[in-house]
Length: 214
Length: 209
Image 1 (cartoon, rainbow over the protein chains, first blue to last red):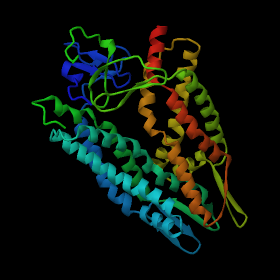
Image 2 (image 1 turned 120 degrees about the horizontal axis):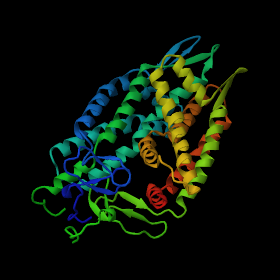
Image 3 (image 1 turned 180 degrees about the vertical axis):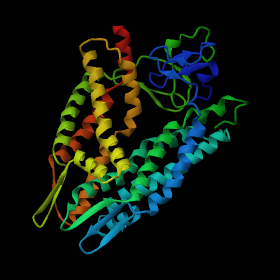
Image 4 (image 1 turned 120 degrees about the vertical axis):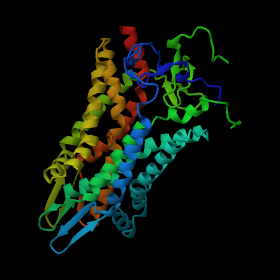
């Protein structure tokens, strides 16, 4: 972890996201393409911060209906019952399978909330050109990128339940609007993480006098 | 202190995708991996016979994926009333009920994306195995990189297990062949991903052209 690192951007080089080779900027040509593989290149992902904010704020807005509205309705001859994500977890917990309850709780409640919080933190720190712990913030970004997909768990659970419980005489399960909002949150936070450019975390280290030894 | 070396040979350099720091490419020992000196990102690896193994795993994944879609995942029985569901059937049902968004999301992450992955891997690796140069290698590698996070077989498998557990309290649950095909597909897909190093594809493509 030497901090004398020279970045590609400082030398006017473009790093390729597909093959990671370096290409030099050609003056007076519009778009730059990778010399080896032809991928269109940018010094940083275009409009990374504003795009990530847009996805993230939409994610925040949909996070509320995703948790408040029922994700599924169970109808039987005698009664109908609506389940939110949280009540589904409570059901698993009270029926004795605390480990499954824990898995669903982490995947459906903890992971989306942590993703929203971490991405917000990263965006704010990047916009303030913070030099604080770039290595740890990059690790946070990688974790968010890695765990994001596991939030889809509840959508798959509802899908299988809807498909299997089709017994007209006994019960039917239908999808609730909470599931739609929840799916949208997962997609929005995943695309937000993809739009975010982790290189922005390291950029403040390159300008001005270097901060104290870290 | 090589930051200002006089004549930089661009093909020897590599830029970290996570922190943009420049480093020199070094030959790796067999099975080794190069990591960024600043942020520890995985830059490239050496996979002995990687493409060959990736191809073998992809063929295996193809057959498992076909089985997983041809048979029901699970069934339930309540007082003689039976019901079974396949993945395709589940997506189709959601679509029919008007939940096009959820149906698209589930279909995309469990049917479309794995198909694209398997199809493109075969498209890329079979000709290279036979030492034929293919024209579409660049867009194929780009699509594979973009599509990867949206392939959610392992999440889907866990979702099936959770839903079956919920149903077990209410009805007799029977697992289907497809469930085990899905289960087998997960390690096979991971193995194929571990063996597949895009860097080796670039080298092979460069060598052939």
